[in-house]
Image (cartoon, rainbow, N blue to C red; front, side, top):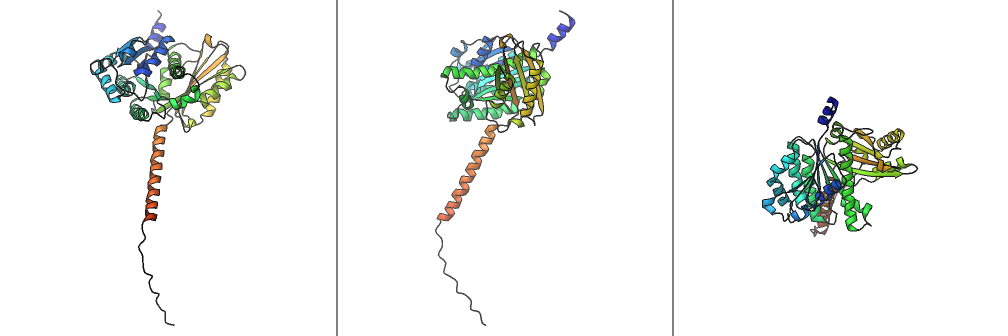
Length: 360
């Protein structure tokens, strides 16, 4: 091994992906099945029956004393207790890691409760910490409220919180069988993590580096992403429009995002002109974005196709807007109710006052 190779290996950022709970473990199993070699993959759960079915570099049963492998029963506070119980084991797995992706489905017990605890551990070790999460459907009111509380906490801890809203996902996969529809979420988050990780850690046509990623996500807050693919004539334009028009979270103004990370993958025939054109078109859609970085990679399996993964960083919290909207509606109802009560009050009868006579 030459001196330069040794330096390169020593400077290569280390990455870990930790899946928490049922949904999180399913996503890391997807990554393992697709041979993500540049990251350490960890599956952690309180339910041993689900955990033993997963594929990962490390299977971790958390909260052995608290739950004894039987799960959290959907209680986030129990999930948090389990993560705290296993904090030393989690810390041991994450030591020396530069970038930690925390993957979970919010709303239940293990993922919702343990994610903030794991994020605190990762940040305490100095890792760039990115949570990639799914939100429950709007109809799942209790689970969705649990998820919102976790998002507030994770936004405070993590460098970035990337969200997929299942309600939004319904528009893409609503006609698929249930199992296949949820597999779409696994594929989307898995593709995002795999794309970023491999572009940062492996030689590419145009590399992203650790500093680039940090510059985009370190602002914090909520992030979202879109994926677009194009084939045949105008494939660049098709891929760009797919990535721009289909972020998996309702964002009030995509152009106001703090940062944009563009990951481009194509076959051997992909040209420099196409890559440059993608950068120009994407930048034109987010004119107020402070930081835009992009990388490109050739994949022999992508012959004839171009794929764009666009990460929109710090887009604002749509759930805060939602809460403010509800509060405004409440205030309007209170004002209206008060006005109506005044109208309904019986009016006091008053005798007319005699007019004063004026002497001419």
